[in-house]
Image (cartoon, chains in turn yellow, blue):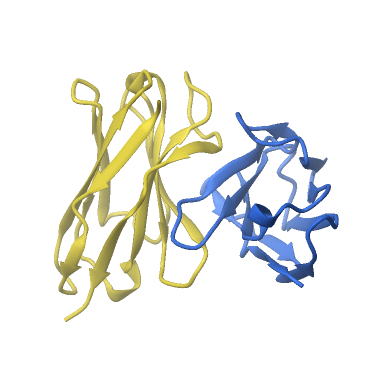
Length: 122
Length: 107
């Protein structure tokens, strides 16, 4: 059974940093690209970033480029999102999500974690 | 970036009725469009990918169609568990983008 479990969310002041993690199980983690998608309270979905299975390719939404860094540790089946220079508008539930197909990247996402809430406020 | 516009914003229907949801792209996304269902307090669930392919375990009452800029998600006969918010997503160009969602509510 595929499982994705996020952690690391919480309350942080504007300008602060936070590191999210997602622990994966139940599939060949290194074969699949992984994504972060966020959802502000009461709002729609916003794709944030993707990393290829090898970790060699990363792509970001313009809204987080230069502030967020996605990474993965395939030996530990872990996906990370380092978030720096946080702003109030980064407040959201952050989901990690697996690409539906392996071997490349940029597909739809078939498995999602339960999400972790990040609140940026003074 | 590619903008996806979903209509209607809200669809009020009764169980057993047919639901037709629309997603229009600001430029062609070929067939690279997915549909997700989200219920309150839950993560999104992939229903359809690449316009018409049902994801694993998705009931056959869900179907997708379209190409280019115009796409449709059809639920042939609404079950009580189908009342939720539905999002479309394109993967043709970076960044991946989602539509604003259609809420299917009980009439």
